[in-house]
Length: 234
Image 1 (tube, helix red, strand yellow):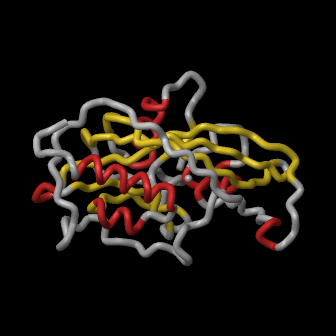
Image 2 (cartoon, rainbow, N blue to C red; image 1 turned 120 degrees about the vertical axis):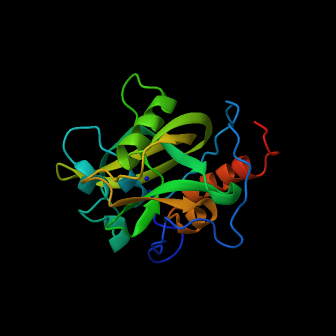
């Protein structure tokens, strides 16, 4: 269940201490409950690659995370034109789960994949008949061990990646809905076999750690909502 494009910053993002509380200069926020309302989603078309796809759980038969991560190799990356057998459209949901930190700061939980080298938002496949908000709450709970309540949608973005299925190269076009969830209970407990780590970060540090541009933008939007509203306001 975890997000095609390669990390925006060359190399692997550093692994932060995660459990540290506010650092000097960290965002200081009023953290009263939010009113439920939606924002129009930002649609981002991204290039071919399997990096962000590794954040999603495969709900189809076979494949699993290894297939989603494109470990069979990407012909385009080797300078040859890939021969794509077919394309498939998928929908995933997840989001930014947050809690009040010390001294009015905000903390958010990220998950690590790729042997702990990439920090990202928890996410996964939307089941048939399942709503986006319900799927986001479930995926966050399964990947992080944290129970949260969806307060609003932050937006959405679309990305593409290639993966091998039964020896054929398949183009996956995925629409990722990102929600803002308020933490209710639980401590970070990464899902065994799916997630390498799950940690709370001060929101400024989470933005710096995020491996993908699109997710970093969602974290920035969450910070604006959580930190720039009047104290005690919705």
